[in-house]
Image 1: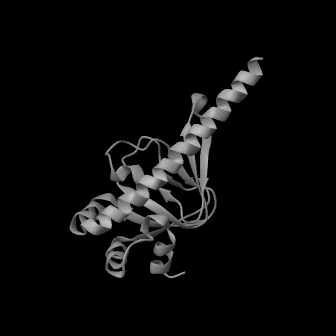
Image 2: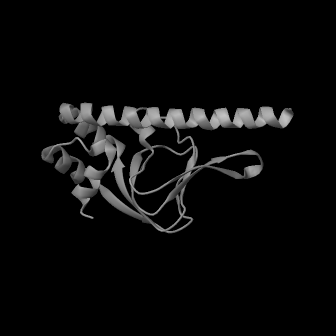
Image 3: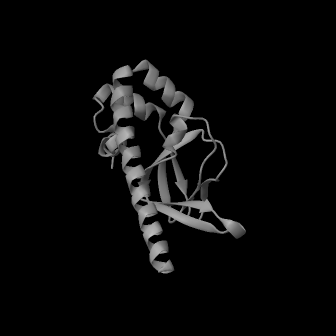
Length: 156
C-alpha cells in the first residue's frame, strides 16, 4: 500500500486534503521491529508517536514482581503514543512488537510545528484524535466495569 493511501486509511488523517497529506508524509519515517523488540519502555520520554503499518504491537504495564500485564494488542492502522502530542509526561506503559511489524514514525516537535503552520489541518486532526481518545476511555471504562463485576461475583 502506498504511504498516502495508507495515511488516508487511518481515521486521524482521513479528512486531510492533498496538501495536508503531503505535509504529513514529509514528516513520516518508517521503522521495522522484530518480534519481541521494545518500541518504548514505561517511564521513557515521549518524543514520537506511531502508526502500525503492518504487524502487531502489544502494550504492557509493569505490575508487582516485575511482571508485565497486557493492556492491548494493536494492529494495522492503530496509533501508539499519541498522548505525547498533548503533554510531555513519561510513557504510561511499554510497547513491544508482538510480531514482525512496520511502523510509521512521527517526531512530536516537527509534527506540532506542522499543525501550527496548517491550522485547518490541526482542527481536523484534533477532532479525530478526540474521537479516538473518547473511544479508548469508553473501552477502559467497560473493562473496569467488567473487572469490578467479576470481583464482586467472586466475593458472593
